Image 1 (cartoon, rainbow, N blue to C red):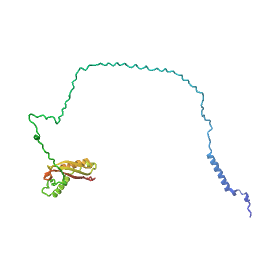
Image 2 (image 1 turned 90 degrees about the vertical axis):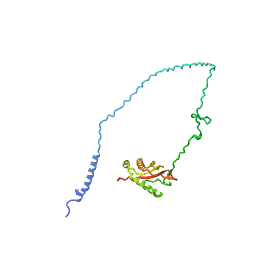
Image 3 (image 1 turned 180 degrees about the horizontal axis):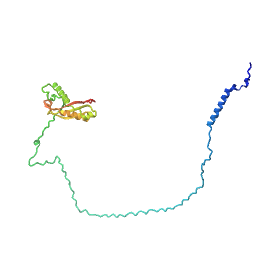
Image 4 (image 1 turned 135 degrees about the horizontal axis):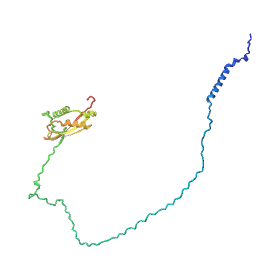
Length: 248
């Protein structure tokens, strides 16, 4: 059976192509509508400049009369008057005598007694020597160390010194607050009478030095050291360590 319609004249055969073409045309028109711009057409007053010839003002010329300063006064005429005076007055010169005493001057006598060389008494001052503790013949004797040999006396002296430092040791509160610690070396002298003198110290801070000197100043009187059978001064050094800890 043959179809009734002619396929060449069928309308819906290319419908998709027509749809695509129409869609592109609509998109192009929409894009043109969005990009279309309009501008104001009103007249804008931009103003104008009136260029007119400027009139130059004439400045009058003023004549100034210069006044000269008055001339300087003439120099004063000085008349030198020389008066000649006859040299009739005799002027006596004042002689200044020296008051220093030389070897040629005689010594003024005191009363009626002449002083001779034999009458002058010369007193000989015996200087006490200072000997280190390590080389002295007889070391100072700490109380409680009597009647021992030299080596035993030295050990006893050092032991008593350590015990004295421990018993009198006190950590300064100011040093604790500032967290100060360190080693202080105290040097002192045991004089010829057995007393502790000339205390000096050297350490990391003045607070610790002062406390170390206080401890040494509390040392008791000792039997003085001897060199060749005579009492002498003996210097001694003791280290004191101030150890700071957070739990102290």
